[in-house]
Every structure is written in C-alpha cells, then in structure tokens.
Image (cartoon, rainbow, N blue to C red):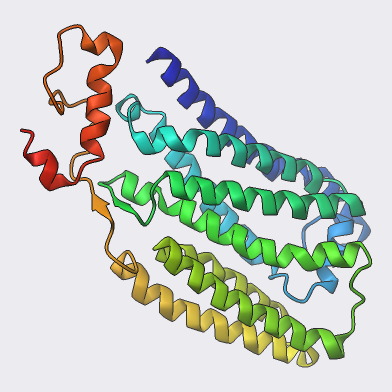
Length: 318
C-alpha cells in the first residue's frame, strides 16, 4: 500500500509540474516576440506567430486560454482525488496511471519546444500533440468514461479528461497545416485555401461528433465550440475570409445545440454498467476472506472484483 500511495502522489506531482512547466516555459520567448512586434495577433514565440498567421484554421487566442485554463484546473482536481487514500484501490485510477505519465511527459515535451522559436520546434510540437492525443484516448478508455456510471465526485472529475481529449483532437487537425506550411509543403493561395479550409472545418465537425458518439461522451464535443468559435471571431471582420468565418460560426452554433442536448442527457446511449458504491474501504467482500488475507491483498482484490460487478449482482453478496 505504501508503494501504491507513493506512485499516486508521484503521478499527481508529475502532472502538476508538467502543467506549470508548460504554462511558464515560453514566457521569455513570448516577451521577446512582443518586444519585436507589439501588435502581434498571438501571444506566442515569433516562429509560431508567423505560421499561425498563415494557417486559416487556427482559432483566436482567447480560445486557447479558455480551454487550457479549464482543462488544466480540472485535471489537477482529478489528480488530487486519485491520490487520496480512499482511492487506493480504485481500479480505474490504477489503470489510468501509466497513461497519466505518458500524457504529461508529452505535455512537458510540448512545453519545451513551444518555447523555442525555430521551424523544427513547430513540427516537433505538432508531432507531440498527435502523440499526446493517443495518450489522452488511452486515459479516456482506462477511466471507463462513457462505459461505467460512477458516483460523485469521480463522475464529475472525469469531465476534464473528456475536454482534454476533445481539445487535443481539434489541435491535431489545426497543427497539421502548421507543419505543412513550416516544411514548405503548402504554399498559401487564398483562392484555393479558403474553400479547402472550410472543407477541413466541416470534416472536423463531422468527425468530432462521430468520435463523441463512439466514445459515448457528449463532453468531448464541448472544446470544439471554443475551437470553431475562435476561428469565427478571428476572421469575422475580414470580408476576404468570410467563407471560413461563416463556416466556423455555423459549426460552433451547431455544436452548441448538440452539446446542450446531449450533455444534459449525460451519454448518447446507456452506460454498460453502473457502480452505486465506490467506497474502496468497505469491509464486505465477494467471498469470505481469511483473517490474514488483508496482508496478502486478497481482500482488496475481492473489493475490486465486487466494484466491477453490476449493482444488482453486488447486492446479492450482502
């Protein structure tokens, strides 16, 4: 148990450290960038500013601040909860631990390269974001979001993981043109790129909704509202970019309606199973346990097995 407690605390420390490092690491580079160009559109290093200005599907800066601030705050709360002694034998938190380490290690790598103003860093940041999406999906799966109905506070503390996964999905789409532009594989041409950008947004909207349904997770859609809304506000007063602005605005409005309807329901389809008692320190067990079993871990394994049963099955064990 001591070892489990150590690793749960270490996971929380790693994640919070990664968040702090990522949010502060590029501050010096941003200050230099602002000094060189006080009127810059984004508060990012110069190299990123240049490529963002060419990428039609990058949202306005406010979207990044709103989403990341919410996600990081929520993830910190979830990590604090998983480190509590009462959650020592939560099977979902146990399964999630390796994914936490992968995701926040990648998050720190992203922070390192996002602070460097050079073409290589733009590409590495994009690749890291795509790798982190895989880790976030693994985290989403291990926490059984959309599969298992769990009691509060875990029920609500899982929401930031849904937002995190949704935002990284959108960022994976947005970052691809950044890499192509940086590598010289995409030459900007408004006559061609405006309809292409509108098409990419429409495809992203359709894919986001399809993925949310596959994950059985309406909260996954919410970050797309900020993404589409940020793109719309960025181009709204630019007549030459009206096609992109109107497409993004339409998608944002559509997602507001979809999210309002489905988030209130909680899921797209019923959970596969529900847990009504998540107290991992209860004394009852699946079968009689010998007096010395608590030292061998048998009793706690029995509790995990009970927790994974349907409520009606567990009631029959009392």
